[in-house]
Image (cartoon, rainbow, N blue to C red; front, side, top):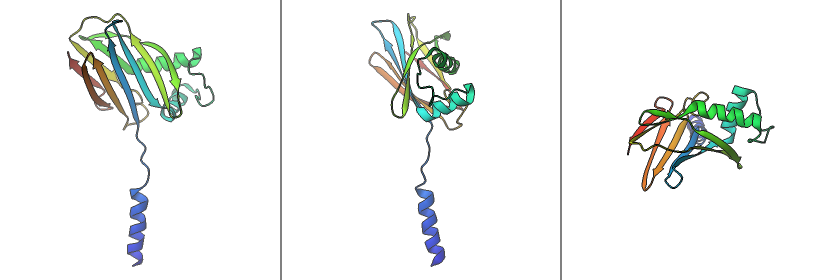
Length: 163
């Protein structure tokens, strides 16, 4: 009976241990009226804070102003080194616009202006792959009334779509 009771207790302890998910969400939206691509990216604060502290030695918990020139520069450098966008196999650089913070998330805003006419788009997003092996980056892509969603992982950080 003691072994059975111990088994039940261990089962419930293991079954209900919280599991940490490493996820970011990015929304890529084409704006026909302005000829631009707007990217809104949401990343959990604790994950991104740990990344910046590890890479840059900056504690975002202490330095709260995400849009100060020093912090904005470091965020810009990291995001642009981990996000690539190709239109018909030509790489276009994003412009980092700034960030907002809420209780649990950082929201980052990026944009490409003066988009070319294109047939295919290739997206690479390796955000946080250098910190978490099981990081997943959820991508939502919207062009007109066409919507696509997919997940990028460390072993497959790139996806291409034809329009």
